[in-house]
Image 1 (cartoon, helix red, strand yellow):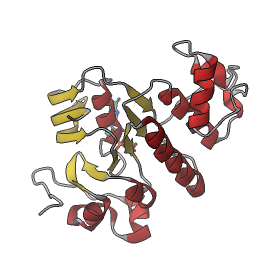
Image 2 (image 1 turned 180 degrees about the horizontal axis):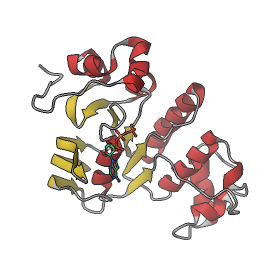
Image 3 (image 1 turned 120 degrees about the vertical axis):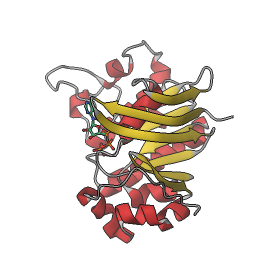
Image 4 (image 1 turned 45 degrees about the vertical axis):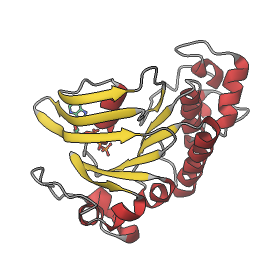
Length: 243
Ligand SMILES: Nc1ncnc2c1ncn2[C@@H]1O[C@H](COP(=O)(O)OP(=O)(O)OP(=O)(O)O)[C@@H](O)[C@H]1O
């Protein structure tokens, strides 16, 4: 039984079609990564899956009682507003101090509870967001570009933390990332999105798939090619990794 099943999702922002015929599912405990160029609909898809956006066509089925821990792409907190980490973790619901401390430990930032949010490093801030997601005791963690702004060692460390959290909680992980070389190896399954699902499968299968190579190139150059991508991928044909 899958935690989430999405079938044939279409979504437009205004008149602009962002997702077309997207299907994906996540099973308990697996790590699934969505990769795709800027503007390919990754954040939109996550927001459809959590129910923040309503799909215009297709269906999203969540296992009944499913708890989702969501780590957003960015969260702006007014730096002039004093707010300790502990206070932040108590929004919007109060949590027991030991639950907050346990979540911070699991997220790899024990001992920051008394610090000001505005004084955390980028990596610590993301881990506090992760701690907040952990407090939901999620069946699935969803992370949207959670390592944006972190340097490469910082993001590699963050992904190792995610794997540790997955082991501890036994939850599934669905994440969006640009860092193909880092996330590919950590994922059970990779979905390459460009408005539609271009290809999907194990990291080995996807990185060898023609549609993936067309989008990202190969090797380390591939990660860079991501930022320069300007190929308007056709939506009237699907490349399947299995072909
Ligand atoms: N609230 C919105 N209103 C109008 N258009 C939007 C909105 N949010 C996103 N879009 C547009 O939808 C498209 C997909 O955006 P989305 O953020 O889902 O892509 P993404 O793959 O997550 O991109 P990135 O890698 O740059 O974060 C983009 O063209 C974007 O401009």
